[in-house]
Length: 176
Image 1 (cartoon, rainbow, N blue to C red):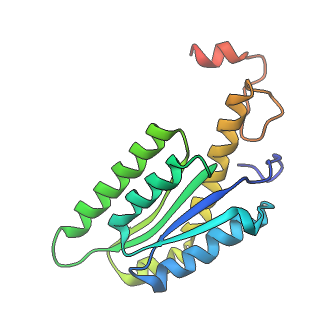
Image 2: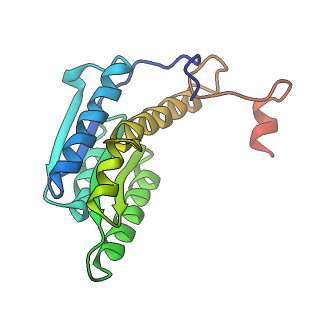
């Protein structure tokens, strides 16, 4: 989203973070908290929920999204390839599970789960030279929440996250 586009102040948000590979997920968590604060979020509206590993992200994300307490849920984890295909199975299950939660609840659930070949690749994406995917996941979740609010309010043109091409109406966009 362009920096010049206004955003609404974030509502309540849950961050579900894996303790596995904490040297990576801890930095991602700091990035997510920083992104929330940078957008004006109140610390008392931010819940941080720890889980043992990436596989457990889905259960806690489902509980958070289904609770009607949060406008968005951000899931943070790190899956590093080992000698077997175990990482692929976990990554696929988590990605599908988080997508299913979003579709079932209407609450945006951001996939801030790194799937890398090495620890070095993970660290580069957790505050290193490849950015901080935790911060990016938070921004994505909050942008999606803004768009959902805009839809609920009838596609008001002045809502953050909603832009149409000049000359098009809402019906033009909906009808292709």
